[in-house]
Length: 124
Image 1 (cartoon, rainbow, N blue to C red):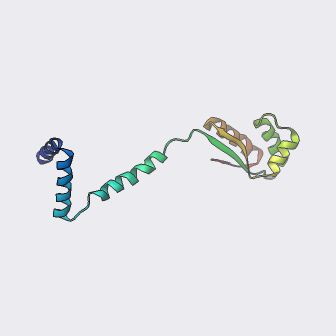
Image 2: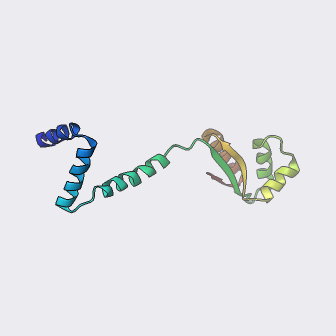
Protein backbone atom coordinates (compact mmCIF):
# COMPACT_ATOMS: atom_id res chain seq x y z
CA UNK A 1 0.00 0.00 0.00
CA UNK A 2 3.00 2.27 0.26
CA UNK A 3 2.88 2.86 -3.52
CA UNK A 4 -0.79 3.88 -3.34
CA UNK A 5 -0.08 6.33 -0.53
CA UNK A 6 2.82 7.81 -2.47
CA UNK A 7 0.63 8.20 -5.56
CA UNK A 8 -2.10 9.88 -3.53
CA UNK A 9 0.42 12.33 -2.10
CA UNK A 10 1.70 13.06 -5.61
CA UNK A 11 -1.84 13.65 -6.91
CA UNK A 12 -2.61 15.91 -3.94
CA UNK A 13 0.27 18.17 -4.95
CA UNK A 14 -0.84 18.47 -8.60
CA UNK A 15 -2.94 21.23 -10.11
CA UNK A 16 -6.22 20.47 -11.89
CA UNK A 17 -4.57 21.05 -15.25
CA UNK A 18 -1.79 18.59 -14.39
CA UNK A 19 -4.33 16.02 -13.18
CA UNK A 20 -6.35 16.43 -16.38
CA UNK A 21 -3.21 15.84 -18.47
CA UNK A 22 -2.37 12.79 -16.35
CA UNK A 23 -5.86 11.30 -16.86
CA UNK A 24 -5.61 11.82 -20.62
CA UNK A 25 -2.17 10.20 -20.73
CA UNK A 26 -3.44 7.29 -18.57
CA UNK A 27 -6.40 6.76 -20.90
CA UNK A 28 -4.15 6.80 -23.97
CA UNK A 29 -1.56 4.47 -22.44
CA UNK A 30 -4.02 1.82 -21.20
CA UNK A 31 -6.79 2.41 -23.76
CA UNK A 32 -9.45 3.00 -21.12
CA UNK A 33 -11.91 5.77 -20.34
CA UNK A 34 -12.10 7.32 -16.89
CA UNK A 35 -15.66 8.54 -17.53
CA UNK A 36 -17.24 5.04 -17.39
CA UNK A 37 -16.53 4.39 -13.68
CA UNK A 38 -17.91 7.83 -12.84
CA UNK A 39 -21.17 7.04 -14.70
CA UNK A 40 -21.46 3.74 -12.85
CA UNK A 41 -20.87 5.47 -9.53
CA UNK A 42 -23.56 8.05 -10.26
CA UNK A 43 -26.03 5.40 -11.45
CA UNK A 44 -25.28 3.31 -8.38
CA UNK A 45 -25.94 6.26 -6.06
CA UNK A 46 -29.45 6.98 -7.37
CA UNK A 47 -31.15 3.86 -5.93
CA UNK A 48 -29.61 4.50 -2.53
CA UNK A 49 -31.41 7.86 -2.38
CA UNK A 50 -34.71 6.21 -3.34
CA UNK A 51 -34.43 3.86 -0.35
CA UNK A 52 -35.45 6.63 2.04
CA UNK A 53 -37.93 5.38 4.59
CA UNK A 54 -41.47 6.27 3.69
CA UNK A 55 -43.28 8.28 6.35
CA UNK A 56 -46.66 8.85 4.70
CA UNK A 57 -48.96 6.01 3.71
CA UNK A 58 -52.27 5.61 1.90
CA UNK A 59 -54.78 2.97 3.04
CA UNK A 60 -56.68 1.69 0.00
CA UNK A 61 -59.84 -0.38 0.20
CA UNK A 62 -59.62 -3.00 -2.56
CA UNK A 63 -62.88 -4.74 -1.76
CA UNK A 64 -65.46 -5.14 1.00
CA UNK A 65 -65.58 -8.93 1.02
CA UNK A 66 -68.58 -10.84 2.35
CA UNK A 67 -69.27 -8.61 5.36
CA UNK A 68 -69.99 -5.29 3.64
CA UNK A 69 -72.03 -3.89 6.53
CA UNK A 70 -69.20 -4.54 9.01
CA UNK A 71 -66.72 -2.88 6.65
CA UNK A 72 -69.00 0.17 6.30
CA UNK A 73 -69.16 0.47 10.11
CA UNK A 74 -65.38 0.31 10.41
CA UNK A 75 -64.92 2.85 7.60
CA UNK A 76 -67.23 5.25 9.46
CA UNK A 77 -65.18 4.66 12.62
CA UNK A 78 -61.85 5.28 10.88
CA UNK A 79 -62.78 8.22 8.65
CA UNK A 80 -64.18 11.00 10.78
CA UNK A 81 -67.18 12.94 9.53
CA UNK A 82 -68.57 10.26 7.22
CA UNK A 83 -72.27 9.58 7.29
CA UNK A 84 -73.77 6.20 6.53
CA UNK A 85 -74.44 7.04 2.88
CA UNK A 86 -70.93 8.41 2.29
CA UNK A 87 -69.31 5.38 3.93
CA UNK A 88 -71.54 3.01 1.90
CA UNK A 89 -70.66 4.86 -1.35
CA UNK A 90 -66.97 4.71 -0.47
CA UNK A 91 -67.09 0.96 0.21
CA UNK A 92 -69.15 0.23 -2.91
CA UNK A 93 -66.80 2.34 -5.04
CA UNK A 94 -63.76 0.22 -4.17
CA UNK A 95 -60.90 0.37 -4.94
CA UNK A 96 -60.75 3.71 -3.14
CA UNK A 97 -58.36 5.41 -0.75
CA UNK A 98 -59.77 5.37 2.78
CA UNK A 99 -56.92 7.31 4.41
CA UNK A 100 -54.25 9.35 2.65
CA UNK A 101 -50.86 10.53 3.87
CA UNK A 102 -51.11 9.10 7.37
CA UNK A 103 -48.25 7.82 9.53
CA UNK A 104 -47.29 4.15 9.59
CA UNK A 105 -48.97 3.38 12.91
CA UNK A 106 -52.33 4.85 11.82
CA UNK A 107 -52.14 3.01 8.48
CA UNK A 108 -51.37 -0.32 10.15
CA UNK A 109 -54.14 0.16 12.74
CA UNK A 110 -56.70 1.00 10.04
CA UNK A 111 -55.57 -1.95 7.95
CA UNK A 112 -55.93 -4.32 10.90
CA UNK A 113 -59.45 -3.08 11.75
CA UNK A 114 -60.63 -3.24 8.15
CA UNK A 115 -59.17 -6.70 7.54
CA UNK A 116 -60.77 -7.93 10.77
CA UNK A 117 -64.12 -6.72 9.38
CA UNK A 118 -63.48 -8.72 6.19
CA UNK A 119 -62.15 -6.05 3.78
CA UNK A 120 -59.23 -6.44 1.42
CA UNK A 121 -56.76 -3.60 2.09
CA UNK A 122 -53.55 -2.33 0.51
CA UNK A 123 -51.15 0.10 2.21
CA UNK A 124 -48.97 2.13 -0.13
